[in-house]
Length: 313
View (cartoon, rainbow, N blue to C red):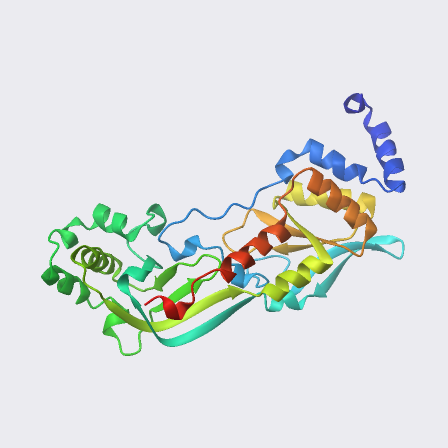
């Protein structure tokens, strides 16, 4: 019945419902545009360091983002003094959402490294370093011998082995719990050496700088205390449709860019202090929109269970 209702009458009915506290425009938007709801899928695991979502960077904004905002700033809209208008707040959670601890002279075995940052091969196409070298560099592993191992390790582009102060370093993202070599070259020789070393049972000690990235648990706790957080599609139609529905309901909301590689969606923050925003949150929960707060809490729990870096050897 309602689907066949004249647009003017439908708008009037929605307005009456919203006056009584029901977010009718939000419900109508969800029904009309199911693509507004988008899941936040973790990137496919591969040997590319870029396959790890950059949650430690959340709150940083790229130069090509528009509108530009300073670190920690969040844009929003609210109904105040008879008008629905934009505002900006600085949230310290987005200033320090992630952290980086640096360990000089960190040591591990070559088998502990499971991914790289750079290669002539397309790293994202491989789930293990072994598959990459088997596919693209068979000659480097044509003989599984100590001599062939030494030959591969002698390759000068493996900077972590052949520079006193190498530009290469190790990286670990605690919510992912893999070790990557952030390299500038030598990917195939490195992978070949690792391949042979595993098969002849030869340890290969690596030593260098380790950068350990983590999510600030207290930032997640603080954001969850003040907001219900969801993910919506980041397209003009989705963003404008959501904004128009929130404006009609006079509910407050803020939005934030998501970190790489999530370029097709954005975070929506609904203030818990706003009763109308909480009615919207209920509608989004009922429609099974992606609960970003719950997801972040899971990432924090995951990183709490990771193995300490000093126990890899």
